[in-house]
Amino acid sequence: NAGVTQTPKFQVLKTGQSMTLQCAQDMNHNSMYWYRQDPGMGLRLIYYSASEGTTDKGEVPNGYNVSRLNKREFSLRLESAAPSQTSVYFCASSLDREDTQYFGPGTRLTVL
Amino acid sequence: AQTVTQSQPEMSVQEAETVTLSCTYDTSESDYYLFWYKQPPSRQMILVIRQEAYKQQNATENRFSVNFQKAAKSFSLKISDSQLGDAAMYFCAYRSGNTGANSKLTFGKGITLSVRP
Image (tube, rainbow over all chains, first blue to last red; front, side):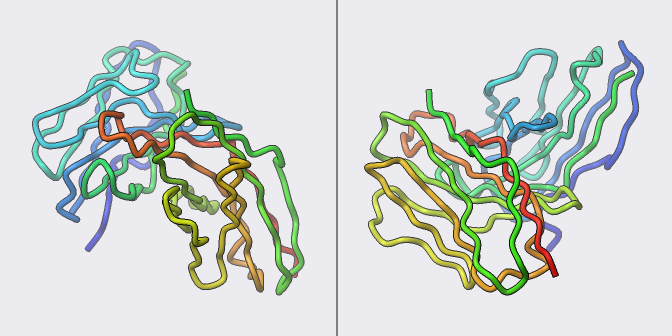
């Protein structure tokens, strides 16, 4: 039982490049989330998926898109990376919206 | 909008001693949940403890306990018998209990706890 896994662990991009961060959970959770963590700050919600087939914007969605591929997987895409998107990205999941969220190990992304 | 404030950026404790980490929050809601998460150098966010606002009893998990003061909107974490492995950044977080809300966690800025051997 791996919990929440994220790939890659580290990534360096040039401005304007695109990439997709992958997240998968094996806990049969219905809800999944993407957060970003910037230095000196707590995590902020980018997008979430309350259940398979639905996605909604969070607090800081600009510059990102998401796909809930199936119940297990929730990906985050940067279409044209900007230096302001340099951050650590965390995926999380919960059984349902009301339940405790469990986090993946994070992806450290640097945009030059 | 809800806010979470952790006013102490850093704290230090001697191994085996007790330390209390402070957190205050602001909300107009009556139904909500509060959490403490631990983030060690590995960056993994680990749930430490959870408190439901409707419960008067303070949550406890082994050496970790909270002091939940609903009227004062205060939610502090007490770590007893501190261990070297407790050294980490600790985040206080809030989540609305409103089923119409987006269930996001609102985090404080975190506090870095160091443990002296």
